[in-house]
Image 1: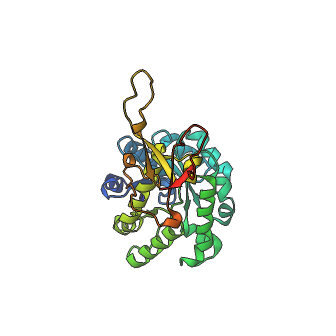
Image 2: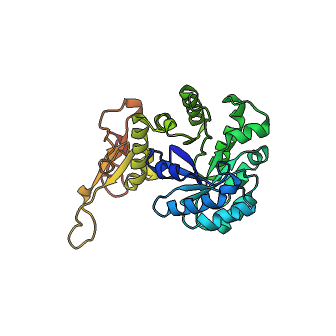
Image 3: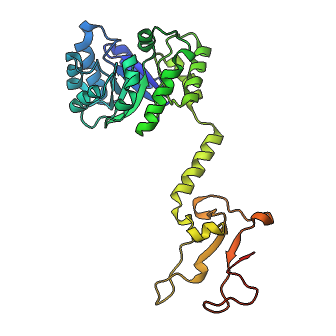
Length: 315
């Protein structure tokens, strides 16, 4: 996932030549609000030329309009993905997806109708992210520009994204360029609610966004352990092994001649299922007696237990 999405107006040839070197994780070339109506054709031409050598997202005009249809005809085939503004229904998504098949889509929520339809919008095939369009949304709701004023909306987008099984939503731009403290506070607030990544309107905002949305060492270590445990399927316990709090680790070895089976020494019981193959640390310390693991002991003869012998005996 990307930590930052840097916007650049599509009709500004000078900015188009610089935006890809600014250091953003992703670039958003704009054909909508940042482009005057009489410069739309120029913007489409310039953006289409840039996209040949530089992958980027493109924000098109509102779905269902002639402007959007012209945008998609010009850049739909070469854009990395499409951001659709002012989304209010799943039909808006389908309309764009039909004209840009196979392209990932970011759906910007910028009105009360869009907030209420967020889950249905997120479920449409092709949608990768929901995004909060803060400035227009605050205007539509007659709300202030503080964080708490949009708490419900942000939480709604997080819940809708999670329920629909798509990636985490993207936060809106912070329009005050000289307020680094406010930018950091808003980014941290969005991250704490479940957002990941934020739109930017100037390169000077990128440093703060990358600091906020970069996982720390503890989070990275935890994620690596989870992935290792998931990948190492050989350490999955059977029901019997779960009962005795032990897991069987089968290590690669040559098979016994003529049998096609692994020799007995290829199977080793390890406490708590920690497995050396996947990089997890093997736990060998003794466990307090009330919770001490058990191990299987062979019966003295098939089907018969020796006097005083139990099938599961403490170590």
